[in-house]
Amino acid sequence: MTTSDAGPFYQKLSLSLLAIGLIMLAIYLGQDILVPLALAGLTAVLLRPVEQWLIKMGLPKILAISVAVTLAVVLVSAVAVLISMQLADFSDEWPRLKRNIDEFYRDARRWIRREYSLTYRQQAEYLKNAQTKTLENFQGTETLGIVTGPLSTIILIPIYAFLLLYYRTMLLHFMVVLFAEKHKEKVLEGLGQIKAIIQSYMVGLLLETVAVAVLNAAGLLILNVQYAVLLSIMAAILNLVPYIGGLVATALAVMVTFISHPEVDTILGVVGVFIAVQFIDNNFLVPVVVGSKVKINALVSIVGVLIGGALAGLSGMFLSIPAIAMMKVVFDRVDGLKPWGILLGDQTPEQANNTLFRLVKRKKRAEKSEM
Picture 1 (cartoon, rainbow, N blue to C red):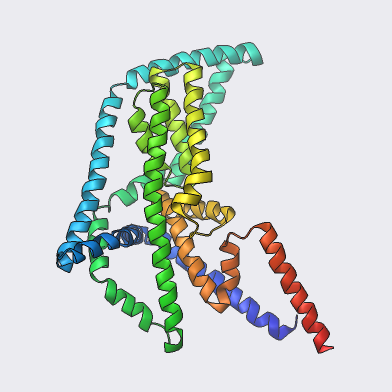
Picture 2: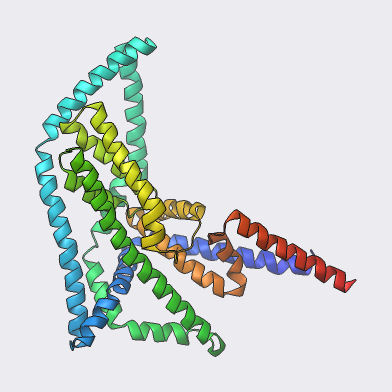
C-alpha cells in the first residue's frame, strides 16, 4: 500500500470513529430528549397504516392522526392497568415469599455446612461481602436512574408521535433536499427501505409479543402456577429487550413461583416452559413473524444492545436493533461506509468466504492483465 493510499484510508477511518463517538456522546447527554423522540418515531411509523386507513374512511388528516394516537394510548393504558391490578394482588404475597425464602436459606446453609464444612459465621461473612459489592455496583451504575429516567418523559411520546405524523411530508421533503440532486433517487430509495424495515419490524414485534405471552401463559397454566397471566405478560414485554430480557423474565418467574410453589419440580417446570418458549421464539417466531428484513448478525446485535443499555438504559436496549438496522441501510448506500455495512450484516461464514474468494480471484486477474 502506498502512502497516498494510506492517508485517505486513515483519514476516513478517523472521521468515521470521531462521528460515531460524537453521536454516542450526544445520545448519552441528550437521552431525556432523544429517547422519547426515537420511541415516538417508531410509534409513528407503526401508526401510519392506521392513519392512512382512517383517511380513506373519510376522516380529516388531523382527526385521523388523533384517533390513531388515542387508540395506541388506550391500548397501552389497558395493558398497564391489567399489570397494575395483578401487581396489587401480588403485593399481598410478600410475607409468604419472605417465609419461603427464609426456609430455603436455612436449608441451603445446612447443606453448605454439611458438604463444604463452612461454619454459619463463615457463610455470613461471605454473604455480607457479596451484598456490599452488589450495592456498590448498583450505586455506581445508577440503576434506578436508568429505569426511571425515560419514564419521567413518557407523556411526550404520544405528543411527538402526533407531530411526526402531522409533519411527515415536511420532514421527508427536508431529507430529500438536504442532499444533492444526483443523490435524490438513492435517498428516496433508502428512506423507503428504512420505512419498510421499521414497519415490518414493529408489526412483527407486536405479533411476536402476543405469541410469546400466549405460549408462556399456556405453559404456566398447565403447571397451575399462580399469577400465570401476569408473568406471561411481563415476560413478553421483557422479551422486547433482545437476549437479556428473556433471562430477566425467567428469573422473575422463578421468584414469583417460589411464593406458592416452592417445590423443585414446579420451579424446574417453569424454567423448562420459558426455555421452550425462547427456543420457539428464536427459531420460528423471530425468523417467520418478525421477518428477515432486519439483517443484522448476532454479534453486532448483542454488542449494540449492551451499548444501548449503557447509553440510555432499557429504552436504549429496545431501540438498539431498529437503530442498527437503519444504520445498515445508510451504510450500504454510501460508498465510503460500505465496509461498515458489511460488518453489521448477517452474512454466513460460507457466504463471506465465497465473497472474499471472488475478490481475491478478481484482484489476481487484474494483476495478471497489468503484467
